Image (cartoon, rainbow, N blue to C red; front, top):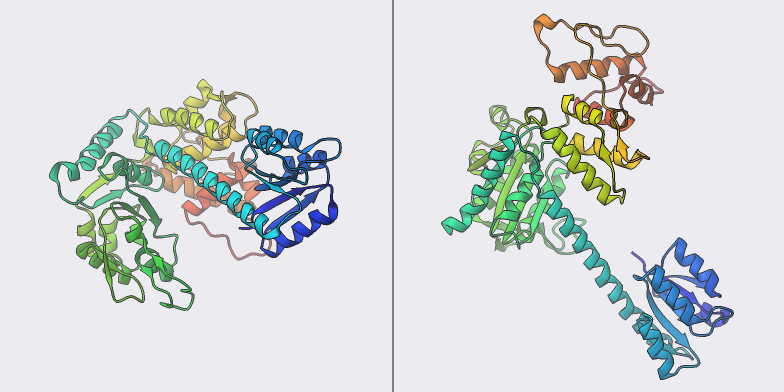
Length: 473
């Protein structure tokens, strides 16, 4: 990433010479000749560093400096002047200037001052990132809910997190199971946060999201030249998580060959980077998660039985949201506060009818779907009260009646005497509407009373595929 520098100087020849010099050192440089013009530029696109002349027409450098620091305190300012004095330097520093350089400008000296300023900028960015990550981690470890399954879950998390401290031995492996969206990563973070390893790193990877040929390199690392694109050395996630926690999400999607290497690493507590002959020890708490029935995968020879039993020393099963009586509304109120804070849209609240709709909805996408629904409502609702229509939930079908598609045509007849499997019913309704609209997602979403994003999520969830017809949208 290139650093962005703004030069404010009415001596255009000098300003352009400085700009050309800095551009040759791979900086992005812009030049303004007046303070008024520069303040407008900064408002539209704040730079990392400002090189500010002390003497400017109409609005002098100190006034510009004061305004920059009032509106954009994160921007570092270096003063430049041909009229240097101790008093001027002190005044500029009091107003927030990082450094001071006298004309005529020594370009190499200026480059060193700019590099020093960039170090300050980088430290500030890192500090802001760590603070935001800390806030996110603190929020993400909060287990919300008062249903009996959640009370049992919190108790189990505390027991598992304390095992290592009580026994004085290494942390046992933990396997978290449950439907997609039930909060498996959140539980893994909570275990880490309550364990003796809480001050160590929490490293996560989604095994289903990384191509097979890259997943091994991510987990174990590699040496320079280990393969074609290995231009340098890279440590693996086992090493990165040393003295902390490694969370392997969607473990069931891992290739069988890599499963064998993973088992060997777990048992030997060491890894060998690709292209290396040296083994490296690690000390991690290993947490794996899956939404797949691994017992069935073992029967189908898609998952190693020995790895399964190595991972499931301690098992946590997360119940779907529909089995957590009272929790959907509590979670919705929690997400309203969380997303309102995140997007600076405070004061939002759910209406009583919205709470009733949330309590009565099946939530096939579980907590993740609920969070996404609330996040969208917080962002799009202009007023303070979030009502039922702001949620975009599909209305439940009337008992014993055909489900309408909005045009009066029957899509599906429900035989109550045979019972209803809600997952299959939802899939069938969505598939029928998509076929009726020629897989026009916008029109189908309108007929179903869903947002386009929610419809897209459910198409992916049910693995629905459009027919190979030109013109699908």
